[in-house]
Image (cartoon, rainbow, N blue to C red; front, side, top):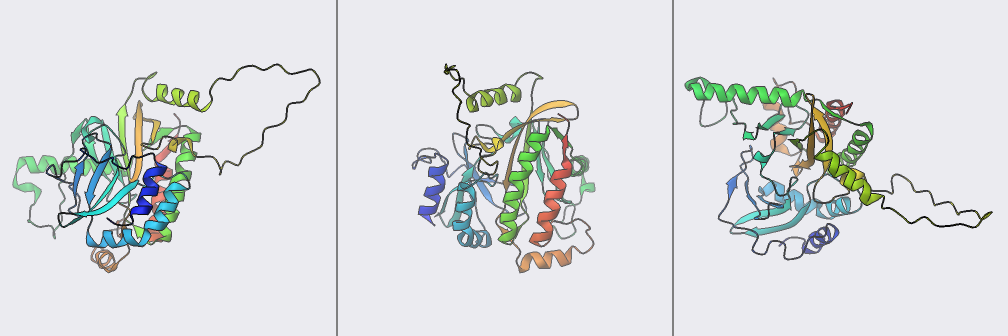
Length: 328
């Protein structure tokens, strides 16, 4: 087990029990995540946690940034995936992190996007079904081209249209929600930039709701929780009430991060109302020689993901800012 004290501090901050994995994980239920890195993952039985294997490079990066990462996620609002454990099991390095949509499979959602602010943006779920990943690259093995079968042609077209949709996404929300969301993301991205990390994604899962239900009822409940009723007190005439101390907005936690297990916002898309679950994932990639070589190999690509951390951070925030439209 790596850095047990620091990850215990994170679990304590997010009210996670020390034995949270006891009888909650089946290591025989391993799945391939489907990404380029070839990582394996396991979803806990209560569907609140995700166990994921780390490459050697990601493992070393996490060892280097664990202390600063712990301070970042426990001392302010953050949408970085919460890492609760870092350990080795059966010859593989694993981390345990929160599931940004606890209690649900990905196919529970109507729409699911992986957004980087570049040509690697993609749609993962459409209409409660997984979008098949059909990359068309000359260096991908086995050498599969989509014209070998009608099914492959259809899947490639669906995958490509999903990428275009993810790249041009416009999500409606109110001004306050956008301001809070961008504020938290900016804090996280500045942290990642300072650590020389890049290639991270915003995961966006959307569930359709009725006009006066779902997210609206959830938000009203949170408002009542934040502003509980108080008894009316009688004051003597001529007696002044002492003014309340003013607090800075920087000292108050962001409303969208008030629930520590998930971040759900009320949003609209294509004229319909949604509950949108958001979080930052896959942020352990450093700007190493492998990525620098990949950048040179992709010299023909105009908007590639393999860019230096500062460039990547600025582009990511600008893209998210332009994708969030005020007008809920």
